[in-house]
Length: 250
Image (cartoon, rainbow, N blue to C red):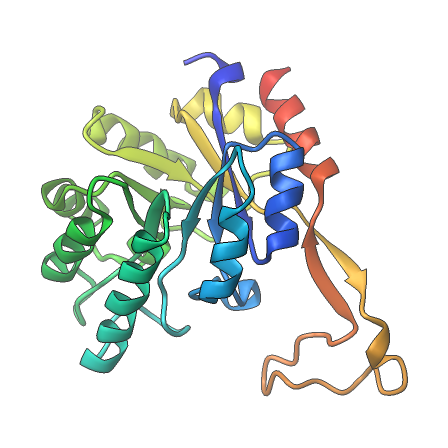
């Protein structure tokens, strides 16, 4: 595939982010909430407003909580309900990930979500990067009918996981799409595409925007131990996406 046909997917956390992504020419959005926590299920209201934006595909994340992917029955039932609502309201696909306690793919729940997607994209997210055997996990996802898998190559970032991503593309052999994500920048994206032979990339394009209502007590945080800054909002930069697209096509 030529570089000018590489699919670009943006990790977004708001309707504003989706608008910026569309304006910059991105192809697809993974819609989340709580990007600071790696992405959680967005509100239905956020999704419905995002779907009003023509010309870009919207795939909501279905992740009921942070910290792993082995869910109890209540968490899973919540996920099923969210997924069905998204599909009923026009999602172009759903993004999810279910693991067993031993770090293998939960094939039962994964297959159920493929069925919920009902022909739309069924995307297994970076829960894949926690599996104990990535090649066995890949075959499980193929057997379940998953459309693609988002992965950093089981490393903190794609540049560090290049070898595994390349092997996954080869092992997949067109049976499932491999979507690299984490640490992709305009300075490394061309090499990633060339080396791994992927046909799409996933990245965020965030910049910080000052939040004025915190000015009288800017050091206070409501995030517990993690203590995220309350005086900055992460928003998607259209310029960053344009730069990435230019780097892909150069």
